[in-house]
Length: 126
Image (cartoon, rainbow, N blue to C red; front, side):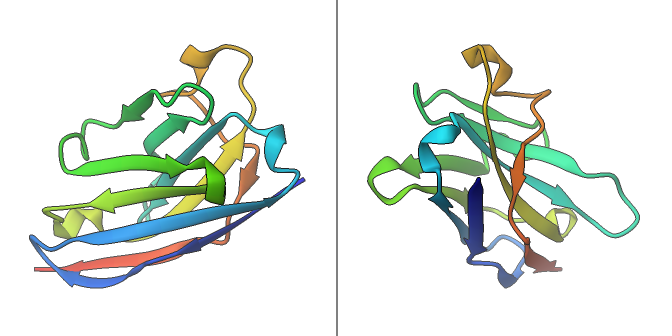
């Protein structure tokens, strides 16, 4: 089992920045892919970014590419999402996820996590 704890959400003006953190605890060597998803009211959940905890390769959705950066600190079992030049449409509940993939390329666009955090709210004001 893996427990995920997100932090760093809040409110920001359009054009501003926030950094989300997700710290994994429990059986932390049981996952090799982590990522961030978001869900806005009335919309489907969207995969935002993923990172292979073994190889470090990353994936970004087109809506956040260039503006968001996912990174990791393996010593701290923590994944970060740096969000820059934020837009009102980035407003959502952001969830951290972790899981296992058999092949590295699976840690990307179509990945769906096995373990989930409780979520952290991000609001971008225009």
